[in-house]
Image 1 (tube, rainbow, N blue to C red):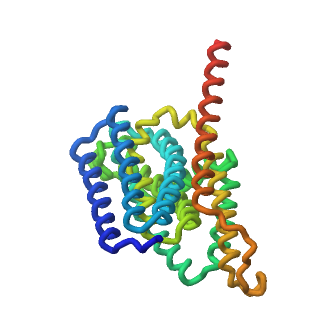
Image 2: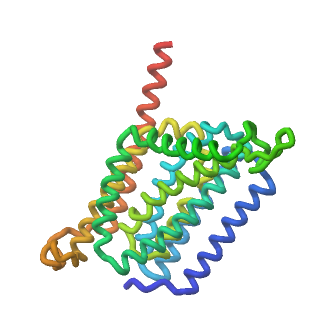
Image 3: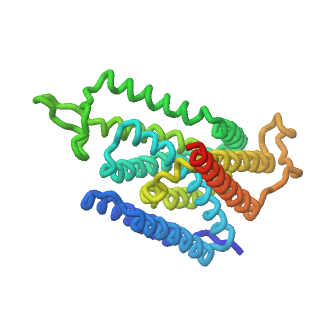
Length: 332
């Protein structure tokens, strides 16, 4: 039998997770450096194991269903976060961010993402509580997002949006040509300028906003608990900085990953539609009555779809990349 999570567990979890994030931030500020592969691997493994321990604790204190919902939400948000890294790579390259500064930039990006997602989570919880038909809108939005995600033009469109905002800022703000360490303001020939770091933070903030809009409806398709939604997002974003350095050039080889993410979003969108039909209260649909024949997709099916989608997309990407390298070797 599933139980409600004890309030002390929820409060304690948020306090501990906040402390870990602050410690991570202080570590970067005190010791800015380019993390080695070994260091990045250890941190990524630490955060993954921490998430699994958290799921076990939820199972102990509240039962199987909340633990399953957390795992589903965490894996979905982790998939979307890895997809987010592709855009971070483009931003870093576009603004020629020194590698030593990339840790700080990523950490700021993660903090912005947490704040934005926290706001969207509260908004989503309010909408769900007062307007059950929102599941129809969430479902339609996710299906639309999935189709757009599968289109190769998506990344180019996102880049154009960011470039337009950057052009707008340059028109009204004096930006220096060079970075000055981790400073946002600098002095050039006696005149104060903002450094390109400001543009990088703005570009990452815009990216985080777009991904928050995509990810929150997705996880609300798996659980309606704001606490589970928020903690799943925290665990998905923790370790993202280290994952960026760990994957490195591998990110460029995962060219089919966005198809896996698109399929997951499409699946959750369909699942949300079925859920909306079960909860239906709209008078122009089935006379305002619940639609009982709509299938309910359980957590185990959802888990299988997420794991298989990401596995197939990753393996297909690596096989394709290997074949391309062989072809280039033969041609050369």
